Length: 58
Image (cartoon, rainbow, N blue to C red; front, side, top):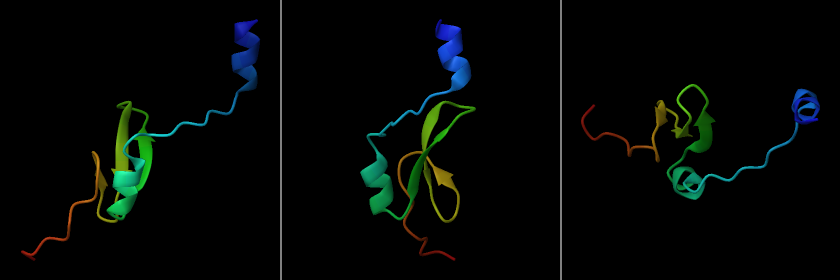
């Protein structure tokens, strides 16, 4: 019975605890499936929790 349910798929609504922090720094929160870690997708690259402030040393 469980196999039948899984093969049909299901919707999962998940809220990461760091989404508001990530979003407030200009990122979009997401999940990195290969590593099973939360990611904050920022304009420059993915970060662990938040987007880094722009560097003053260019």
